[in-house]
Length: 175
Image (cartoon, helix red, strand yellow):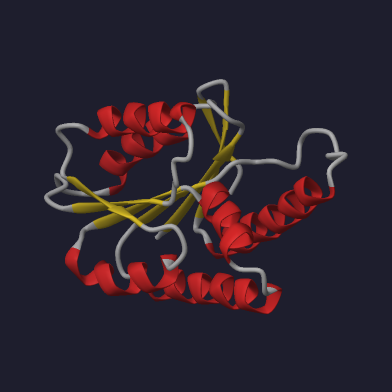
Protein backbone atom coordinates (compact mmCIF):
# COMPACT_ATOMS: atom_id res chain seq x y z
CA UNK A 1 0.00 0.00 0.00
CA UNK A 2 1.50 3.29 -1.16
CA UNK A 3 0.42 6.56 0.44
CA UNK A 4 1.56 9.87 -1.04
CA UNK A 5 1.48 12.92 1.23
CA UNK A 6 1.79 16.25 -0.55
CA UNK A 7 1.42 19.89 0.39
CA UNK A 8 3.30 23.11 0.80
CA UNK A 9 6.43 23.76 2.82
CA UNK A 10 5.81 23.49 6.59
CA UNK A 11 2.27 22.17 6.04
CA UNK A 12 2.75 19.24 8.43
CA UNK A 13 3.60 16.50 5.94
CA UNK A 14 6.38 14.81 7.90
CA UNK A 15 4.55 14.92 11.23
CA UNK A 16 1.44 13.48 9.57
CA UNK A 17 3.50 10.69 8.01
CA UNK A 18 4.61 9.63 11.49
CA UNK A 19 0.99 9.68 12.74
CA UNK A 20 -0.17 7.74 9.70
CA UNK A 21 2.54 5.13 10.21
CA UNK A 22 0.86 4.00 13.43
CA UNK A 23 -2.59 3.95 11.83
CA UNK A 24 -1.52 1.87 8.83
CA UNK A 25 0.07 -0.98 10.73
CA UNK A 26 -2.19 -3.48 12.45
CA UNK A 27 0.51 -4.14 15.05
CA UNK A 28 3.19 -1.98 16.73
CA UNK A 29 6.11 -1.03 14.53
CA UNK A 30 9.09 -3.22 15.35
CA UNK A 31 11.41 -2.08 12.56
CA UNK A 32 10.72 0.54 9.91
CA UNK A 33 12.92 2.38 7.45
CA UNK A 34 12.99 6.13 7.03
CA UNK A 35 14.71 7.01 3.77
CA UNK A 36 15.98 10.60 3.85
CA UNK A 37 16.85 12.18 0.51
CA UNK A 38 18.14 15.51 1.85
CA UNK A 39 21.62 16.73 1.15
CA UNK A 40 22.29 19.47 3.65
CA UNK A 41 24.36 22.23 2.18
CA UNK A 42 23.70 25.10 4.57
CA UNK A 43 22.88 25.72 8.22
CA UNK A 44 19.18 26.22 7.55
CA UNK A 45 18.85 22.80 5.92
CA UNK A 46 20.93 21.22 8.69
CA UNK A 47 18.55 22.71 11.28
CA UNK A 48 15.53 21.37 9.39
CA UNK A 49 17.06 17.87 9.22
CA UNK A 50 17.82 17.93 12.95
CA UNK A 51 14.24 18.97 13.74
CA UNK A 52 12.87 16.06 11.69
CA UNK A 53 15.28 13.68 13.42
CA UNK A 54 13.95 14.81 16.81
CA UNK A 55 10.39 14.06 15.64
CA UNK A 56 11.46 10.45 15.03
CA UNK A 57 13.31 9.97 18.32
CA UNK A 58 12.12 6.92 20.22
CA UNK A 59 10.46 5.38 17.17
CA UNK A 60 11.43 2.07 15.60
CA UNK A 61 12.52 3.83 12.40
CA UNK A 62 16.05 3.34 11.14
CA UNK A 63 17.25 6.26 9.01
CA UNK A 64 18.82 5.50 5.65
CA UNK A 65 20.24 8.44 3.72
CA UNK A 66 20.06 8.19 -0.06
CA UNK A 67 20.27 11.10 -2.48
CA UNK A 68 20.02 9.34 -5.86
CA UNK A 69 19.51 5.56 -5.83
CA UNK A 70 16.07 5.49 -4.24
CA UNK A 71 14.67 2.61 -6.34
CA UNK A 72 17.63 0.36 -5.62
CA UNK A 73 17.50 1.09 -1.89
CA UNK A 74 13.76 0.39 -1.70
CA UNK A 75 14.15 -2.93 -3.48
CA UNK A 76 17.07 -4.00 -1.31
CA UNK A 77 15.60 -3.06 2.08
CA UNK A 78 11.91 -3.87 1.68
CA UNK A 79 12.24 -7.50 2.85
CA UNK A 80 13.85 -6.29 6.09
CA UNK A 81 11.20 -3.84 7.31
CA UNK A 82 7.49 -3.58 8.15
CA UNK A 83 7.10 -0.13 6.61
CA UNK A 84 9.07 2.45 4.63
CA UNK A 85 8.80 6.24 4.76
CA UNK A 86 10.45 8.28 1.98
CA UNK A 87 11.09 11.92 2.85
CA UNK A 88 11.03 13.44 0.30
CA UNK A 89 10.56 13.35 -3.46
CA UNK A 90 11.04 17.11 -3.61
CA UNK A 91 14.68 16.87 -2.57
CA UNK A 92 15.19 13.65 -4.54
CA UNK A 93 14.15 15.47 -7.73
CA UNK A 94 16.49 18.33 -6.86
CA UNK A 95 19.32 15.80 -6.46
CA UNK A 96 18.48 14.11 -9.76
CA UNK A 97 18.57 17.43 -11.59
CA UNK A 98 21.82 18.44 -9.90
CA UNK A 99 23.74 15.16 -10.20
CA UNK A 100 22.28 13.71 -13.44
CA UNK A 101 22.57 15.97 -16.49
CA UNK A 102 21.15 13.35 -18.85
CA UNK A 103 17.33 13.53 -18.96
CA UNK A 104 17.06 9.95 -20.23
CA UNK A 105 19.02 8.74 -17.20
CA UNK A 106 16.75 10.74 -14.85
CA UNK A 107 13.65 9.38 -16.54
CA UNK A 108 14.99 5.84 -16.22
CA UNK A 109 15.67 6.37 -12.50
CA UNK A 110 12.11 7.68 -12.05
CA UNK A 111 10.68 4.70 -13.95
CA UNK A 112 12.72 2.33 -11.80
CA UNK A 113 11.33 4.08 -8.71
CA UNK A 114 7.77 3.52 -9.92
CA UNK A 115 8.51 -0.15 -10.63
CA UNK A 116 10.10 -0.62 -7.19
CA UNK A 117 6.98 0.84 -5.57
CA UNK A 118 4.69 -1.48 -7.54
CA UNK A 119 6.64 -4.51 -6.24
CA UNK A 120 6.40 -3.52 -2.56
CA UNK A 121 4.58 -5.89 -0.24
CA UNK A 122 4.79 -3.57 2.77
CA UNK A 123 3.25 -0.13 3.35
CA UNK A 124 5.20 2.85 2.04
CA UNK A 125 4.51 6.49 2.89
CA UNK A 126 6.02 8.99 0.47
CA UNK A 127 6.31 12.70 1.17
CA UNK A 128 6.56 15.39 -1.49
CA UNK A 129 5.88 19.09 -1.93
CA UNK A 130 3.21 20.53 -4.15
CA UNK A 131 5.00 23.18 -6.17
CA UNK A 132 2.38 23.78 -8.85
CA UNK A 133 -0.04 25.95 -6.88
CA UNK A 134 2.04 29.12 -6.95
CA UNK A 135 3.23 31.47 -9.61
CA UNK A 136 5.18 30.34 -12.65
CA UNK A 137 8.85 30.93 -11.82
CA UNK A 138 10.73 33.53 -13.83
CA UNK A 139 13.91 31.40 -13.75
CA UNK A 140 14.26 28.69 -16.44
CA UNK A 141 15.84 26.17 -14.04
CA UNK A 142 13.07 26.73 -11.47
CA UNK A 143 10.42 26.14 -14.18
CA UNK A 144 12.20 22.96 -15.25
CA UNK A 145 12.30 21.78 -11.63
CA UNK A 146 8.61 22.61 -11.12
CA UNK A 147 7.69 20.71 -14.32
CA UNK A 148 9.79 17.66 -13.48
CA UNK A 149 8.55 17.45 -9.89
CA UNK A 150 4.95 17.88 -11.06
CA UNK A 151 5.37 14.94 -13.47
CA UNK A 152 6.99 12.81 -10.75
CA UNK A 153 4.25 13.64 -8.25
CA UNK A 154 1.57 12.77 -10.81
CA UNK A 155 3.22 9.45 -11.62
CA UNK A 156 3.45 8.45 -7.95
CA UNK A 157 -0.08 9.71 -7.22
CA UNK A 158 -1.38 7.32 -9.89
CA UNK A 159 0.51 4.39 -8.34
CA UNK A 160 -0.52 5.30 -4.79
CA UNK A 161 -3.55 3.76 -3.14
CA UNK A 162 -4.17 7.00 -1.26
CA UNK A 163 -3.05 10.60 -1.67
CA UNK A 164 -3.24 13.11 1.17
CA UNK A 165 -2.97 16.88 0.76
CA UNK A 166 -1.73 18.72 3.84
CA UNK A 167 -3.00 22.28 4.32
CA UNK A 168 -2.07 24.23 7.46
CA UNK A 169 -1.49 21.02 9.41
CA UNK A 170 -4.81 19.48 8.34
CA UNK A 171 -4.96 16.38 6.17
CA UNK A 172 -7.35 16.28 3.23
CA UNK A 173 -7.77 12.91 1.51
CA UNK A 174 -7.84 13.45 -2.25
CA UNK A 175 -7.59 9.81 -3.33
